[in-house]
Length: 369
Ligand code: 5AD
Ligand code: SF4
Image (cartoon, rainbow, N blue to C red):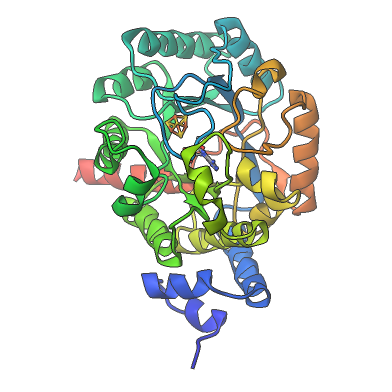
């Protein structure tokens, strides 16, 4: 007999096979799953959604991931770096609008100059906003020293997606050189944890060659790593990338959206107190994508604060939404999305992951003993 959603969710610990069953639910059964996740979210993290203003600092990248539009070998985009003033203006907008938190994201670079520029920017943001604005970085794999320098300059959260947790699949999606290894990515995640960051990771959903078993494994990976935050969204093809040749292998738009919302809801159930983002990629495939994810368990949204003139050059994937919207328009649209899902916005709150706080409290206790 095939177990029902309720049967499966009665288990305190969902194993990989049970997660696979949940990921394979049809649309009607998936609704039950989404409602369960909704209840879990209400109970553990409440009905608040936190804003993280996203600043796409630079599209210069030294890597060549097969799926990404801003990979180094793509010459279609003009490469840019925001000026310090542009970053500070975006940070001020976030602060003035009570976002309480920003994310600085860029392609991966590791020169000394780059490390220092970020360090100085972090210090300036801290001074100019009286330490009120929390800064999350998403700047790829770096050395322990760099992570530490940035941490000491005021960044306390870091996002580094594992992209896919299966090393074999990772190898198919990246060049086979020493700059793109799954092992290095895992090492970077552990260095981030060691440095003291709240660590976020994530995966893409609906990639060529990816199976339901891989996705179930991804969710188990987040749990095993005891991760604090997750951002995961559908893979979206980009014609200037090598992976575009395999576009016939990917699930339909509807299936990728449904699969992504199922991933969010299962994650909320197995890791009830972490922060989960409703990603822009989901919105790119479905105008209601973000609302669906918020209902089914997500509690973080990242409004884009990058100056509009640069946005056409930060297209990781096709049909990226809201590229022409000014930050205040984005804010209004997102407020509507969140209200439509029945939640409220955690204005002025840092919205640290409760999971992180709980873990920290546990380790403090351990230190005392
Ligand atoms: N589709 C969806 N997400 C993508 N990313 C990169 N390329 C794509 C794509 N084609 C995601 C990766 C990366 C993040 C910044 O954007 O997961 O970590
Ligand atoms: Fe660079 Fe990140 Fe794109 Fe890979 S996914 S090419 S590291 S920006």
